[in-house]
Length: 427
Ligand code: GDP
Ligand code: IMO
Ligand code: MG
Image (cartoon, rainbow, N blue to C red; front, side, top):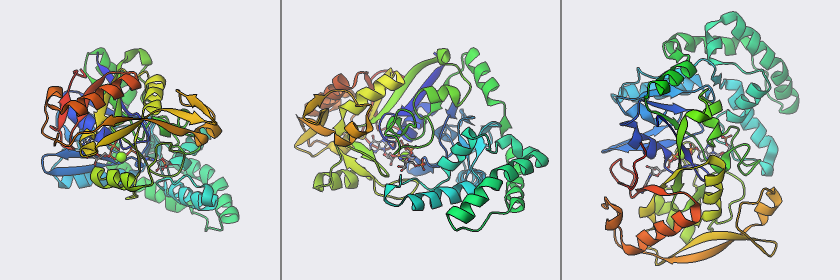
């Protein structure tokens, strides 16, 4: 079973970085398949804390080759600064491979992201402002710039001209901004070419060959299921497919090669940016979750919105991703609550609804129906086996598993690599 997908089952920030890093020591490749530096993945190794945005979390495991797949959007300035930041801390980054088909985020994408959010006013998405949406829009519109274009100046210039012809009209006439000079963009991009050329490869061929040779490949998602542009809470989503299918289109590996899909699931719920969130808590419980859970964005530093666990969402994640396992994270954060509410269904316009409604209007009207489970007060951060958890913590995990539709195969009880209870092996 050589290929696994690891993805967020909620609205992102579930602890994907930690989970990927944990598996990094046992896999040959860790591959990002979508998103860009909107992601913020935290990995804690001993007393060292790393915040990764674009690089796959496998970069911290010496035996593992990190890969940026064709489905990712790459801001070359961010990539190089992340690489040098890690190199300064003694991390070997030389094995990194980048697909030549991945699209680039250029300065005009970042500018457009920011001005279009401002233009939306109170309807804004609350993006990370990293140029993600505009870069994917250009890809789909067939005016994107790809990593491979950095190595052909004439093609690069033609493509930047084609992209800016239209955008400069928009910038000047709609947003009242100064036009961006083609020369300036081309010069900046060419400046990255030499430093990136050594990393660029035919990653699709390489990953398929690796799988054929029984090497283990782990696909690491950014964001989460409910931020998926097709399956999430559109329009309050990111512009790519974090769901399992994205691992295929974003790397060129077919679905028949994928044997396991692991959903990372926080023991409560968080969300950053705008959009519906049925179990959101605007009271002191929400504040307590935020404080104890350290729920502040790794990328933008924004406070995360916090709420109780939502089993409707977990079931939905199981369905749209074909999840085989869950990795339940941050169970330790719930220590100390006497009773813990869990959303088991919604009430929508007076009716009980068990599954996530496809209608945006219905979801906006969804009110959580809670079941309350007994809490625990014992410190669980040292627990190494399921049996070492207090009885009520065990019951909480079992209840979530029953409601969510896939086995919980690991439990996070702290941010560190070893603060994990492994129930079933992922490999
Ligand atoms: P990602 O974007 O999914 O990788 O998640 P983030 O890194 O944005 O946010 C997850 C946060 O929770 C990070 O600060 C992690 O170090 C931390 N974390 C991960 N797993 C656990 C856990 O089981 N317990 C606790 N207390 N913290 C965790
Ligand atoms: P990780 O990988 C949480 C959210 C933004 C915004 C929406 C669109 O760390 O889980 P974008 O900049 O992508 O166009 O913003 O998506 N968002 C995330 N929220 N975790 C993330 O990544 C996110 N990446 C984007 O807050 O609501
Ligand atoms: Mg994050």
